[in-house]
Each structure stands twice: as C-alpha cells, then as structure tokens.
Picture 1 (spheres, rainbow, N blue to C red):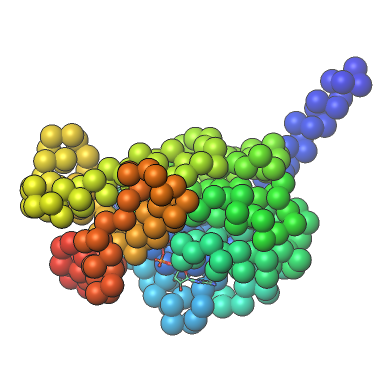
Picture 2: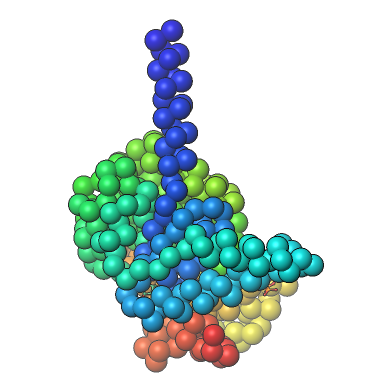
Length: 310
Ligand SMILES: C[C@H](O)CC(=O)SCCNC(=O)CCNC(=O)[C@H](O)C(C)(C)COP(=O)(O)OP(=O)(O)OC[C@H]1O[C@@H](n2cnc3c(N)ncnc32)[C@H](O)[C@@H]1OP(=O)(O)O
Ligand SMILES: NC(=O)c1ccc[n+]([C@@H]2O[C@H](COP(=O)([O-])OP(=O)(O)OC[C@H]3O[C@@H](n4cnc5c(N)ncnc54)[C@H](O)[C@@H]3O)[C@@H](O)[C@H]2O)c1
C-alpha cells in the first residue's frame, strides 16, 4: 500500500513538474532561437527571448512575425479574423529582453541557442546559475558540443540536458532530447514532455558527438563539399542528384548554406580537434575559405550559392 501511494505521489509530482514549464527563456534570437521561441509561444508557453541588443531583438521579432504569418495562413487560409486572433494571441505570449539576469530570476526552462562556442556558452550558463530558481532546467540547443562540457559551468548537473531542434523549427518535426550521465530522470522527462507539448516528436540521444542526426548528416554534407572541391561534380548537380536520386528535400550543398557555413565550420572544427584520426571529421578548405570571406550561406546572402538578402 505504502509502495502504491509512493508511486501515485511520484506520478503526480512528475505530471505537475511537466506542467510546470510555463515560462521559457530562449537565449539567442537568431535562426534557431527565433524558431524555438515562435513554436513555444504558438503552443501556449510564455516566452522571453534574450539577445545582445535591441536591434538584434527587433530583427528576431520581425522574423518570428513573418514565420507566424505563414503558419496562420496555412491554418486558416479562408478566415482572416482567426488569423489575426492567432497572431495577436501568440505575440502576446512573447517578450524580448537584453538583460539575461533579470529574465533568469523567474523562469522554468532556459533554452540556449547562441553561437556554437563552448567558452561563450559556459560563460553564459555560469552567469545565470546562481540567479535562476532551484527548479529551473537548463538546456542547450548545441549542434555538436558535448552537453556535459557546457553543463560543467553550473552546479545543476542533474537539471541540465540537451534540446536539439532542427532548422526551420516551425516545420521540422523532431527534437532530440539529450541526457548526460548526470541528467536526472525528472529533468529528462520534463524536457521530453516539453518537446511533445511543442508538437514535436522526441527521440532520446546520448551525449555523443552530433547526437543522432548530426553524426550522420554533417559527415554527409562535408563529403558533398569535398566532392565539389575535387571537381567531381558541380554544386547544382550534387544537389539535384541527392534530391531526385535519394529523396532529400534539399541537396547537401544547399543544406550547408541553409544551416549556415559558420555553424558547419564550428561543428567540423570542434570534432576534428577532439577526434583527429576520424577522416569523416576532416576540415574542408573550401568551406573555410567561404567563411573567411564572410560568405556564411543563406543568412549572409551568399555561400555556395547567392541569395536575395533576407
Ligand atoms: C545543423 C543543426 O544542428 C541541425 C539541423 O537543423 S540540420 C537541417 C535540418 N533541416 C533540413 O534538413 C531541411 C531540409 N529542407 C526542407 O525540409 C525543405 O526544403 C524546407 C521545409 C526548408 C522548405 O521546403 P520547400 O518545399 O522547399 O519550400 P516552401 O514551399 O517554402 O516550404 C514548405 C512548407 O514549409 C513552410 N515553411 C518553410 N519555412 C518556414 C518557416 N520558417 N516558418 C514557417 N513555415 C515555414 C512553408 O509555409 C510551406 O508550407 P506549405 O507546404 O503548407 O505551403
Ligand atoms: N543553424 C542551424 O541549422 C542549427 C540547427 C540546430 C542547432 N543549431 C545550434 O543552435 C545555436 C544557434 O545557432 P543559430 O544558427 O541560431 O545561430 P545565429 O548566429 O543565427 O544566432 C545566434 C544568436 O545568438 C546571439 N548571441 C550570441 N551570444 C550571445 C549571448 N552571450 N547572449 C545572448 N545572445 C547571444 C547572437 O546575437 C545571435 O542573434 C548554435 O549552438 C548552433 O550550433 C543550429
């Protein structure tokens, strides 16, 4: 009987914990942060986006609005009033702030989506660890850095995990939930429930390089860049081949531009430094050249291809 009561209590506390993710702080309002914030607000969460300046936050808010309009149009193509209500309600759950310490004081979940750099991520988490409430869970959206290394900047190893979303967040249906050996069961289930509450399918991934998707996808993208570098095929033909011959929605060269060439470079460089003997993680001189020229892909207007500036 005592056992059964304990089970019930545990189940109850688990479900209240899950419902307790009401306020989400998204740090970094760029490509990924804006998408994460948008979908979290769309699914009924109160969200604050934090970034380095008002200017960046304005751009972030504008891009969220634009993307929401696409979603509203899709949901209610014939009903203008319903579209307007959806926009107003979602935007009312969204706020912007440049002061991370202020926001961290009262939030249930922090999702970090800043630049792919371990030292900068550690500095950020360390600055809010003593400010955030005890119950607050920290998560990183890193593409490639071990969650354990980022978490080491804090004293809440049991309340730290990975939530890895995919670009474009409003469209891609997956979230990888990453646990380290220290991530508690409650933290893991709260993160997985949150992913589901955002309308995503979740998979559990270990804290290994690239988790599941990137461990397979990034070497494939870099092999395509190496193929281009060798002059074996043109960028356009590589992309056409993989779209029509393998059923991918985008070819690997176009996808590299879409992800951001700087982000791709950070990923490969980090893995190569840690695993220099793995040829799949070898640097790509062509990628490095484009990044050094400021050609970062779609977001900068040029990468392997040229784009109309966003
Ligand atoms: C590296 C990281 O750590 C991990 C990653 O993120 S790896 C990258 C993962 N992402 C991918 O692999 C993306 C592959 N590409 C795709 O799936 C598709 O090309 C794409 C969804 C991006 C665009 O699709 P495409 O058909 O070419 O263009 P488009 O017609 O504009 O969009 C398709 C639908 O998505 C919607 N959409 C696209 N981007 C959107 C956005 N930002 N916000 C809201 N809706 C969006 C469109 O409204 C459209 O909806 P509809 O079909 O109902 O009309
Ligand atoms: N681009 C992708 O396809 C993709 C997909 C999944 C995960 N990720 C990961 O998500 C993270 C963000 O990537 P992104 O593509 O959105 O980058 P991005 O460059 O588009 O955006 C990063 C944002 O973080 C802000 N920022 C930087 N330092 C900050 C700080 N200390 N405090 C607050 N804001 C800060 C920047 O001003 C910028 O707006 C990275 O870790 C990346 O690896 C990227």
